[in-house]
Length: 217
Image 1 (cartoon, rainbow, N blue to C red):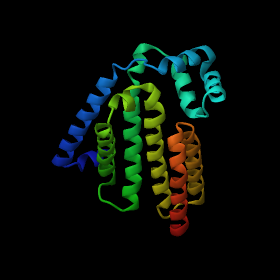
Image 2 (cartoon, rainbow, N blue to C red):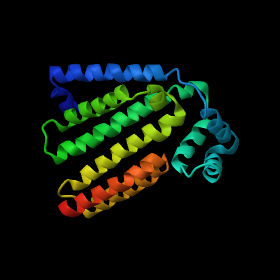
Image 3 (cartoon, helix red, strand yellow):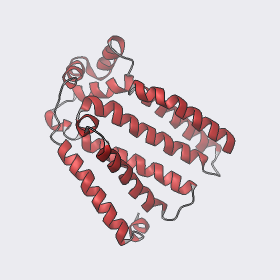
Image 4 (cartoon, rainbow, N blue to C red):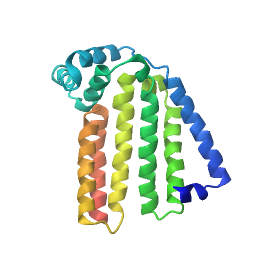
C-alpha cells in the first residue's frame, strides 16, 4: 500500500481526488434515501416473516429472484430509516472495491506498470462514469427496490470479469483454479437470483468466457 501511494503522480492524485469528491456527492445525496413504492411491500414481508421467510414468501408467490428478495427481506427485518441512507454508500464502496480488484487482475494479466494505482483509478472511474451517465440516478442508486437487483447485478458482473481475468493469469496452481471456478459458480448463482435481465445476460457471458478459457488455458 505504501509503495502504491508513493508511486502516485500529481495528475493521478488530482484525478483520484476529483473522483472521490464525485463519489462522495452521490453517497451524500443517497443519505436522504427512504422507503418508497415497492420498498414498503418487501420491508413489511421481511419484518413479518424474517429474512428466510420473507425470501421464500416472495419466491413462491411472486418471482424466483431469491438473492434479490433475500437481501430485501434482510433489510426489511432489520429496517430503520437511518440505515436506508447508508445503502447507496455501501453499494458505491462495494462496487469501487470490486472494480478496483477486477482491474488489478486485468493489469497483472497485461503486465501493466503500477497495477495497484491503475486499478484503483480505473475502479473509481468506471463507477463514477456509470453513476454519472445513468438516466435516473434515483432508480439506479437511491431506490432500494431497483438498486439492489440492478446495481447489485453490475457489481456481480464486475466480480465475474475479475475472477475470469485472474483465472487467465499464468502459473496458477490446481487449487487456485478450483477456487476461482467455484467462486465463479457461486457468483453466477447469486447473480442469477438478482434480476431476470442479468440472469439472461450472464448465460452468453459465461459461454464467451468458457470459449476463451478453452482456447487460452
